Image (cartoon, rainbow, N blue to C red; front, side, top):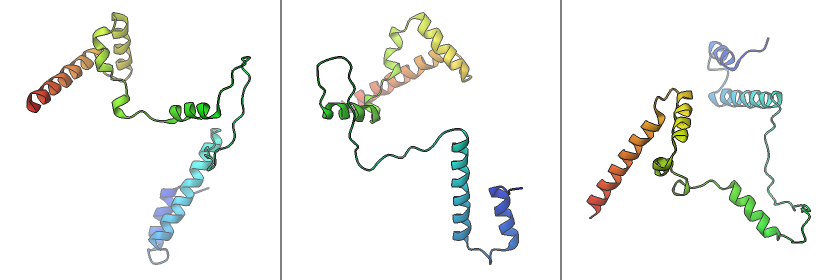
Length: 143
C-alpha cells in the first residue's frame, strides 16, 4: 500500500528531523506531488500542453476562394484570441440592465438561483445604483 503525502510527512517527523533536512523533505514532497498530478492528468486523458519556443510554420486551408490571406493576418487573429481583455475593455453588464427584456431578467434570476442568489437581477440593479452613486460622488469631488 502506498503512503499518502501527509502520511509520509508524519512518518518523517516521527523519525526525527536530524535524518532529513527540510529542503530534502520539501523536494521529495514536491516531486511526489508533481508525479501525482501528472498521473491524474494521464488518467483523465489530459496531457499538459507545451508551447513551442519557436513559431512553427502554418498550413493554409483551401476554402474554395481565390483570395490569399497573408500569414501575418492569420497570426494577428491568433494573437487577438489568445490575448486577455484588460478590465477597461471588458463588457459591463450593469450598463445594459435597462435594456433587458423580462425574459432576460428571468434568465438572470435562474442563473443566480443556481448559485443560491435570490433575485439576481434586483441585486444587479442595486449594484448599478451604487456604482452610479460612486461615479456621481467622484464627479462632485473632482469639480
